[in-house]
Length: 281
Image 1 (cartoon, rainbow, N blue to C red):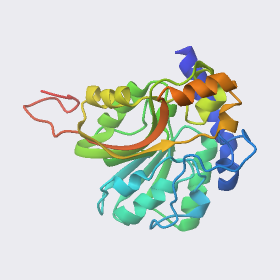
Image 2 (image 1 turned 180 degrees about the vertical axis):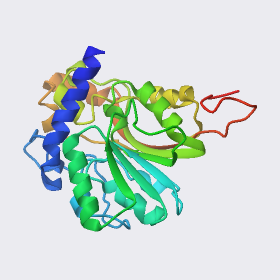
Image 3 (image 1 turned 45 degrees about the horizontal axis):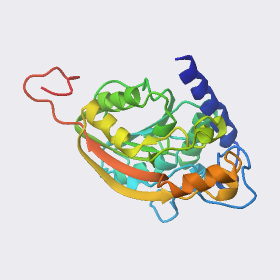
Image 4 (image 1 turned 135 degrees about the vertical axis):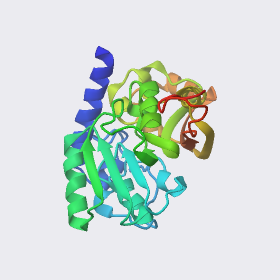
């Protein structure tokens, strides 16, 4: 528990710094809060500029996918964005759910909440709100959301099982999520696993793809589908901050890899007279 709290504090401090930086600055560093390489790299982020609802002030270049693109949001939906940052995915979701929808962003970093609220106020959005909270203990009532989205955040959560149990809890029966995240194939070198800076940069907090999908099954989700997958290529000059040349060569030759996935899953409709929180009958 102490280690989990330490990791959360690392993430909170890192993203508090990021909140005050530009998208360009964040994209030119491996961890978002500092320059880890000499080149300019857009390592993980996707291009939002052609999506309806996109607002440049809310885009800090921190995502690893476009979860709203696959989220099957409908007019009037209540959409919850976990790790909402400056509000980027919330504003895209609002453009789909419309004025009759409700959009709720949850973030553990006060600076991000303030930035997101300021962006929503500038846009005049009355049905978009942002709440300070922990994804392992989401500050929402049960069965609140039609759709949950999240972008490159769940891998930063130390207790992923607890986090996905919370996603299940806040979804309505037949509700669903679309989440973009970082997963692994093979093993990361120990030097990267132990590096807090890389943890805050979304890499060493990731787990194996199979383990990730198993957590979703254990949480009670159904119709689990990987909607999109792409390999993340981290430049050698960044990795050499953490590995020596021999370690780098081994990592590149052993079949291991870092991938961005966007995964969809549903909370089944409660049947057989189960209690509302029951995951199966």
